[in-house]
Length: 338
Image (cartoon, rainbow, N blue to C red):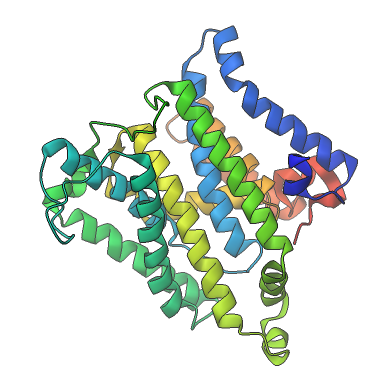
């Protein structure tokens, strides 16, 4: 069963029920939107799925590898910019200036999205190769610094909108699928999220994942046992960046706009909040965290622009009394997946 491949056949009955209900709710969102004549629900749910994808990518290194990255927004933003830039040149009929030849971009998703993952992965490789030589607060500050460097770099490029960002006039194209249709786009995001959950589940339960967990618990001991800890952590960091890049490609299509604000450290902080809120080291937890944070923003923002005031106390309570996050509250002792 697909559910067993994500959460594991050894998971408790309560865990399986909670996970199954969650997946069924995700598949039923378009039905609820039609039933209550609220089509905007599909757009909100699509945004939740996209941010769940990037939250899972952070959880892979934070919840399982103990790497506290404050620059994850850089990978999300770069993936979005890859789609935006390729679409911009395709629409304008101009050559992509930083690539050899006279390639005028493309709107094909099977070219755009893999390129978004590749470029984000290369950025993660560069950042990881340098930052992983440090640890603790130094690692946090280096990842933050790289993200801010990229943020200011994109602001300084007027060709792609600079600080104002870049409008995307065409969505990515997939044969036999209309991504302009909200439901088609939603199910595309849902399928990619489920595939990501399945792949990440296989990764964390593999030998690679066991070594990654060992690095989180006692890196010195793993080195003493002869494991190339640096290489394992770097590979996890690159995989995480590639998944975030895919989320960025989807986000660019969803908003039909891309701006440097995606790379700002506050965006990375929001992604980290999603992981902590949902539950680190659980994979399913970040999905719950993204849903909780974005729904809270949607509901409370209608009452006050200072909705973050309510988020602060909630996070404090979760850190103090529910260290396994919302997912841990729902499934109890089975929450510890790490």
